[in-house]
Image 1: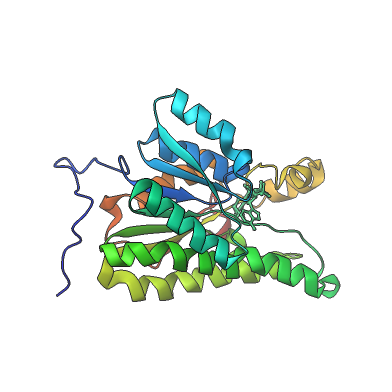
Image 2: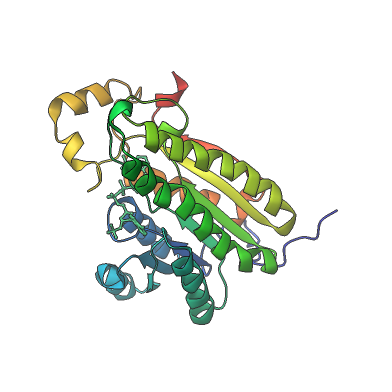
Amino acid sequence: MTAEPSRPPVGAAGARGVAGQVAVVTGASRGLGHDLALAFAEAGAVVAVAARRARDVDELVRRVEADGGRAFALELDVSRPDSARAAAKAVLQRAGRIDILVNNAGLGFNHDALDVTEDDWDTIMDVNLRGLFFTTQAMARPMVANGYGRIVNIGSQAGIVGIPRHAVYSASKGGVGLLTKVLALEWAPHGVTVNTLAPTFIRTPGTAERLDDPAFAAQILAKIPVGRFGATADVAAAALFLASPQAALITGVTLPVDGGWTAQ
Ligand SMILES: NC(=O)c1ccc[n+]([C@@H]2O[C@H](COP(=O)([O-])OP(=O)(O)OC[C@H]3O[C@@H](n4cnc5c(N)ncnc54)[C@H](OP(=O)(O)O)[C@@H]3O)[C@@H](O)[C@H]2O)c1
């Protein structure tokens, strides 16, 4: 029998969500990470808005504060484990604890498998898989010690099914899915859940160039049964749920947010 996590308490109506909790969102300078940080702040979390260059999130922090929310900029290059450890320390100094980690930082560029270079492999893996692991290790340490935590990884539908020209990206995101299961098992006794969201294509600075190509966009849309691309709000809604105290019994899961792409 494991002890009940001591904190944070779930409101009597079970509607507490993430309000008042300390959430780290990585890769928040633009795209999905930017919108996830905003969504967590709007839901009342104290958000450590992490980016490689803190100045890239200053405007977002100001916007949150102007709206009455709480956020601060955090320098974090996930490809450097020393940066992750320093960032975790900085959050603890600033906010006293870490309740939630959203591992959003990631990158992908696509080549035919025969053209992938060693540099391509290392660049993607260093951020998407190795970086995610060591960032998680650094941020989870205080969660485990504290007996409570919620870790939400941003994977991809490409980590569940194969997509041509995505060899390295798919391998990295597939790795995140399995890492999710192992970490979920190791940290379940400590009140820390670990889950992954697997979005379909969403228009962000990272995908704009490809989705602006009408032929590519049409080909992608044809594979999404609900008939539209994803939106950052779709991912934020799922992330807020998995990061809430109410999702205590959900761990080790990869949840597609893909309009049915992987149901086929
Ligand atoms: N958009 C989609 O269609 C889609 C679909 C499925 C999954 N995803 C996943 O969702 C996440 C966000 O994607 P996005 O489309 O928003 O991408 P994006 O527009 O390219 O933004 C990527 C973010 O990751 C950050 N980043 C890159 N390398 C980093 C590092 N070493 N340390 C810290 N941050 C780093 C970037 O920061 P800098 O500004 O410093 O470069 C940027 O903020 C990624 O994990 C991606 O794989 C996206």
